[in-house]
Length: 257
Image (spheres, rainbow, N blue to C red):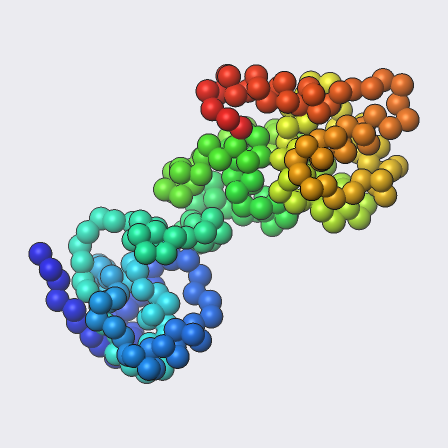
């Protein structure tokens, strides 16, 4: 059944959805709505709350723009069970940070753990999701659950090991310590049984000026191995061992990490 489009200037009757992504700059939208008004083809999607207010499920940016320029809000009251993310993804996809902000705002401890980890380390959201789940950085195995709101924190050991090294590297002035390619390389190397975190931190502290940005993952794997083995009698083929360990994990997990 098609719902009737309604309109109102009583902005107080609407309530922002707690899971919505943050509303930022609406200047361009305000200019467009001043010229064209609120287009009927795109009404807000709202549901009636227990207190009688209308909770906005989709259309937050248009609502804020309309309120700023003083025009009537156009909306449709619905009673469907679709989630906010599903509604928005059908028109303009959320980025990972939108999902993270939405879920942390609702107080979900699993997502708060990801946010805290990102804030402390500077590691990108996508990689932090994999690490907090207990897997290799960049595995993407938990992306779907993350978007659906069903993500759960896994074994913290690997994530804490990565954080330990990243914070140490930042402390000694290596600015690219939290970049995507390096984190993926570090995550793989940390799976190698022969790898010593203490030894690597000592080597990177002594030879930080020799550790440069690399153009790809292979470059970082080789750079880590070079620093790790510098001025050591025992040479560990970390890049090779990391690749072998990754192949082993792919077989065990039945999917690529």
